[in-house]
Length: 418
Picture: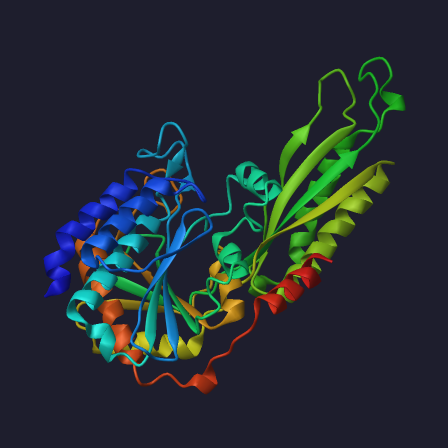
């Protein structure tokens, strides 16, 4: 009954967050809203803050297994969204505001009912900033000032030791698309990505009077684009490779042969090894294109996020809970996509799952994305996740879990960027 009783308050709080979207590492109003609610539920709550706007709190059952329930605080940069912030361009068209509502609904239920005391694990709620990989100029400034070390909120939290005491990670996420019935999704693997910059350099000359003395950097970038397009036939379809080159900077003028142009692109794959292989092909295409037109190219690689392979063992508990549940009609299983998230980085440290939930209309990250089934999102789905936790209690086999260190994570990133 508690989920039904608290539904109106949770829905209103989530709407408040939706109406006040904030970009990563700037979620100050969101943080205050969430903490105010948590302190109302539990005046004696203990909070550990990190990364400017991140924080966590634990429902401690005195156990030596610790499960994290993770919610993301940030919005997307989408100034054309109907409900975007006119000053910052931020908009909640990825559904993170509903994640927060679900986490708060779950915390409130478990604390008030004291149901967490029956678990054979502790449950830590982690509210993480900056999941979306954007607003990079601001984050570069934070990096230069030594305030952060990573563009993504979860890698930054990993560096700070926020997840050192965690053994299992559970996240939830809005499902893209519209569904005729209430639906969940499991085992939806995500791509990893790198960010590449190619700065082609030529030689300027007058485009009308003396084009013969110039070396056209724009032509080099065009040749590079053609090479990428022709190479797509050779890419493994199972890896769901995505490449999206764009012109980021140039000094072009119609009467001058351009001597410099920068092309940026992400590169997404389902595995790290194939990511390295495709990046090598891209680098070769850039070097060859510059050389073909007697120019040069500078290569820059920036780490994005690691691929996310959901833990199949842990998702068995979600599936078995669904089979016993009579409120949710449908389940999707094993449908990988090329979207990415920093949950992939976290899953390197320990097993993680991300359970999808429907209840939205419009295109995710689009101008029209919004929830249309709040009862499902804020009452029924949190109740389902509570049932998942109950299903897990007393049944998790520690031998089927793994644990890696942040130092090992750093070594992996170095191997990718070298």
